[in-house]
Image (cartoon, rainbow, N blue to C red; front, side):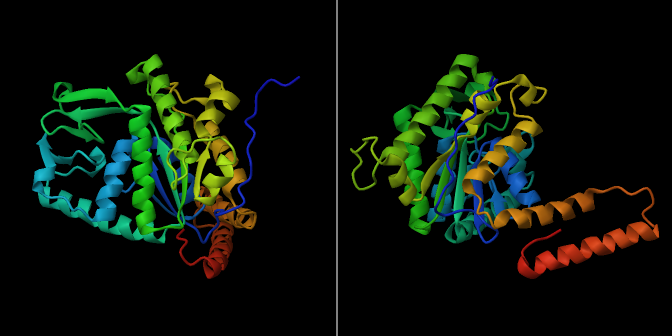
Length: 334
């Protein structure tokens, strides 16, 4: 008797991820979860340079600024609660010093431009289709920065709007890097503040838009026949990974949620990460990951006596293992 429905996954054959890959992750807080895994295993990766971006319009706006090198000026900022904020970035970047914020934002635009040109993989996690428009500027924002809700208009991106965002994202990125592999996924985090029904509507819009984009031949935007769509999308370097479906239909139990009952807990994140590895990782990568994990576990070890001879010998052996890895992967930092 089987007590769960396991999502069938298919191993990718092209553009697999290895330690020579350079990975950029953008999107919702689930990008941070997966990015933390890449960081733990010492891959070459960058996660959310502008902070968490929940919806596709925010990601499109960020990438448009990056690709066009459209730098920020004082007119793009807003002052609230004794800090300067940028509506395109997360509040973690906000600063009490206007010049410092502008310098940081524009430095990120420059560095991300370079990262996209060098990246092999761009992983985009969409969290919600609900957006907030700042009424005064008629601008859809990435973050409201705790400014009064009366200054914003809440609306949901239609499937057509979301599809257009994703098409623009692909076109922008391809303009800098024609060979980059785009991997879309939908965050399994439930945005219940929008309401239970509205959250499901939002996820449905995101999923429909992603599959619209995967189905569309860039040389014939009217073509949406299902025949050979998967192979065609793969040849374009465009793919979808089923994070949302794994959480909703495979795990499907509150024991896989954090205390807020909205976010996946560590067990769920680990499981989705394992599924992602099975789909996207090159086999020669996994033995290296095991070696990295040994070192990471060793560094996390708390000895009873740090000064003991036994512990010093342990540290020496750990350093030898790290140096052996650094010979082949000098970009790793422990």
